[in-house]
Amino acid sequence: MTPTLLATLLGTLTAGLYAAACWALPFGKCRFCGGKGHYTTWILKRIKPCRACKGTGLRLRHGRRAFNYLARIHRDATHTRKAANR
Image (tube, rainbow, N blue to C red; front, side):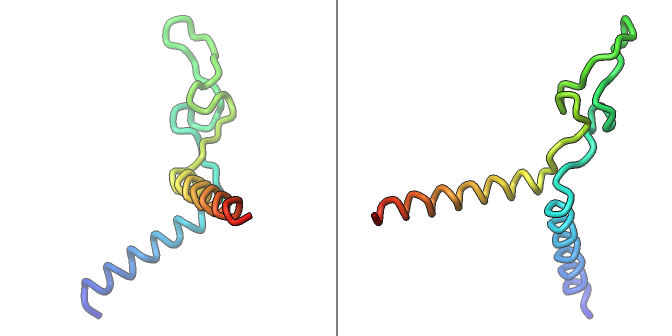
């Protein structure tokens, strides 16, 4: 096996596993609050809800966000084509 072929197979396998993870587990931990849903302010040590995840502790993965965008484009394109044929 050549190194180029091995690198290509490894990259394809990695992309496939990430796509499967985005399909099975579309949400990941919020990076800002660490999945807790809140953070502590520095000055008054007050607990506030996380602004990045709106207090849920979860964020939509980048791959799932891209999949949703492409699915929406496809749905809109096929919907308008069907409406134009009527």
